[in-house]
Length: 382
Image (cartoon, rainbow, N blue to C red; front, side, top):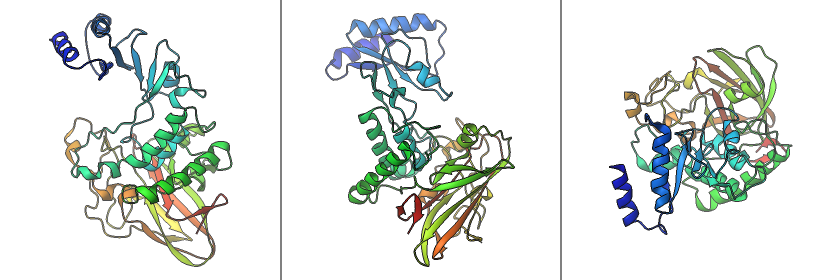
């Protein structure tokens, strides 16, 4: 039956319209794995088409273009050294990351794991959006997943190839004084111009690369972190900090204001993948999700308005294939979609303190504090 379907496809769709055929091979269970792949490769090649398959997936020959994905550290770079051609599918999942962090991650990514691009083997990458969780208002898909800002960063990286400079971890923003940090700040300026000129109502994004934090995990010493979003899982991994199922992160930064004034900021303490509802959900009334806290000059900053669904969607498990996937995300569960918090700043330096608890195993642990203001000289200024 499969062969008949392919034969009909090849008859109806000429090679000029479709030179590549993606045969999947991930998340399938076939008894004769090698035999099946050899057979389907032969069918496709006999019609002068090029097969593409997932890696990891069923075992394929070097004639097949491998679309590489894997979450294990170092495995993707290793996979690109195999024989044959490949596609980078290990960075471009819009639905998986905090959209603010995804933008930086894409820009900092080493395209196809090649510092010097080799287009004879590395054919490019994929940018995709696989929600999995049911969507209520389809017009919100792009905003909920940072599609426009993600496309900008992905295009910049893959059209240019290589990377922006060496970084410890693509999920952590670099020191603004480094080569990568300076290039990221310059790219953010480009993004602001594009946002304000073309996409004012289609982007929930703001520059944040130059924010400097001192982060303390439990009783460990304070260490530097950067950016409006700090992935605390990546931070602990990179800094070799071991934590259990529960932990507490505290962080401090300084905002320098030229005069007394009020500003706005996005604040958040959990960003679930839009393909999985595992996360804190919406905070209790008058509290941030996960009981995270934010203080400015000792004054606690609370959510700017009452929650419509206080305490909802607090799921401490993976929801793939479960009824919870049928509950659409609402704006108030995603900090970049919410009304920003109002913050009073005094003239001079203002101390911002964040308290971000981790309360269960499997939490995507992070915090977000993004002032909607200008940046100068490596400090946050208004």
